[in-house]
Amino acid sequence: MTPEDTTIAVVGDGFGSLLVYATAIYVGFRPEQIAVYGPTPYAVATYAGHAGNLGQTVLRSESESHFLPADWPTFAQLDAWSRRSPAPLLRSIRRRYNPGLAEILTEARTVEDRLGLRARRIPKRIGWLHRELDPEPHFLIYGEDELLLGRARHVAIALGHGPVSFPRVLAQAREDPELRERIVQAYEPKTYRDGGRYVVIGAGIASVNEWANALEAGAKVISLLRNPAPEEQDLNTPRCFFEAYGIDAFQELTFEQRVAFLGAILKGTSPRRRAWIEIVEEGIAQDRFDQLIGEVDEAKPGPAGLSVHVSSRHGPAPGWLDVTGVVCGTGFVRSCLATPLVRRLVDSYGLQVEDGRLVLRSNCGVPGLDLPESRLCAMGLLANSVVPHGDTIAGLKYIARRFVADCVEAEQLRERPLGSRLRMQLSLARAASGAIRRTRESEQLA
Ligand SMILES: Cc1cc2nc3c(=O)[nH]c(=O)nc-3n(C[C@H](O)[C@H](O)[C@H](O)COP(=O)(O)OP(=O)(O)OC[C@H]3O[C@@H](n4cnc5c(N)ncnc54)[C@H](O)[C@@H]3O)c2cc1C
Image (cartoon, rainbow, N blue to C red; front, side, top):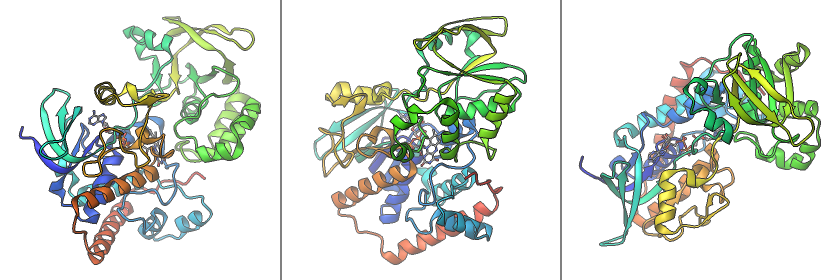
């Protein structure tokens, strides 16, 4: 394989890569000046997998978060035009509009296809980035098999989330092939058995979602919390809401009050149904939903498939439970060191990590490796310490724009004229709208 020489490389092939690519083309870079490295066939593949396993049907984010290179039209405007309906606009005015999953993924696919991203993909996972300064600063990009795959002057790293996380005891239990399929993560594929009994760990949105999924399938749910109040917000919990409300106040609430509060704010991700809260309330009334405080400290095969022992630091220990399975809404491993490429960069270049987060410059540059004439920029979750919403579409877009603007300056790029940008934006919007019209309309949940 001949190494690919480009001006810009994106390591990681998800949402972040599409936003960098689309922005770069929009301002005037040519497709052959950009390469995207990663194993998936298209930019939405990883996200679509997670969202599908969770049953998400509308995004949590609102109308401004989408994949056209410029912000106008907003997604609500595009949706309204596609459906020939003012409803998205009326919702958007009241901030009650969330892009449908099918619609937004269709837009992303359209942008990707129309701008020729597929031809710029190098379908390999990257194992190593080497900083070279001679004859001029650039990066060597190596695959996990240590083959040199490319060189680029500017690199953005957008690797998405680390591995899914399991409580230690359950991670160990999963090593037993007999138990593995009974202990799953909320972000993994799963099925619930009618009449089965499931422990769902956590109370973030992924767990709440699984309560409803299991109850709807006719199963019983035991919600298991380590503490009476959740310690950490789930990935999708709207942080601003929590900030406005106050985590402390939230933690003071009773279980019923917390369910009601979550019901009020977690409007988006709860899937295929208008009111998961009603499903949970029905489950409580039918004695199919229970909540325990404690931690699983032992797991073994049992009469119902799995026996888990639950101990508690807050009151009487629940003891042994015979269940069909355990679902962990415990999210992703948050430390950047869980990502092998980042760990290698940290070890080799002595990068600073605080509290599991890579210490970055305010432009999301990686200190020691990032130069104005040859940028190394972190995106997504890796950049959360600088851009708190860096792992959302809006945050990714913000970082992509800054990164591309720096590349424009470093390369002294002759930028695409305004008229050409407008034509590109309108043509992408028209194509996306046509494609959206052919998708089934997602139901708004807010
Ligand atoms: C279930 C769920 C719901 C979400 N809902 C919303 C929402 O409603 N609104 C919103 O704004 N955001 C949402 N997000 C957050 C965010 O928009 C997505 O996580 C987004 O996909 C992040 O983009 P990314 O490019 O950083 O990572 P991803 O899209 O996950 O892509 C990362 C890619 O990098 C690849 N990769 C990993 N390691 C390597 C390597 N070593 N070499 C090459 N490639 C590699 C992976 O295979 C993956 O394809 C949600 C996230 C999840 C998980």
